[in-house]
Image (cartoon, rainbow, N blue to C red; front, side, top):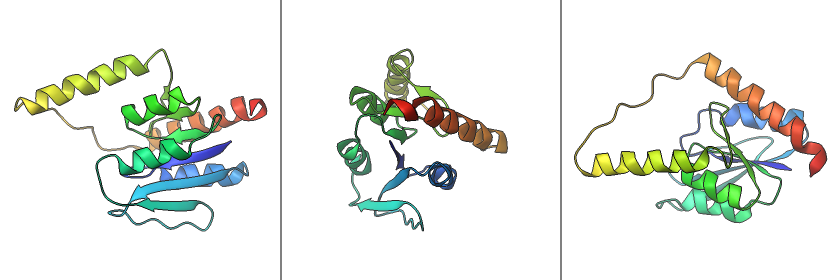
Length: 148
């Protein structure tokens, strides 16, 4: 089991690395060249800029039983198809019961934006969201580490 982080725009990268380290798990940060990451624990993979280039790298290196941290529903769906566990930056676990609805909401939002509509962005991140993520990632690791 490894922790793979889609770090482009991820507000919990440091938390995920810290949890990986505390559980003795390998951690890989994947980002494109418009972001700069360094870590004394995690491996950092930087790919060229491009639509979904970091996402494609992450899904291509993901192995069954890994955990992916991403806020991208499309990437989460690809991870689930490869038997990779996935959760978002707020601790929501992606699974077969919610991924289709999330992909539909993404598609609908894209249609609205393409037609000139505007959507309200997310509210400012809170410490509670960070804590929810910390709890969810820790539980996901502990619930699945013996099955890998």
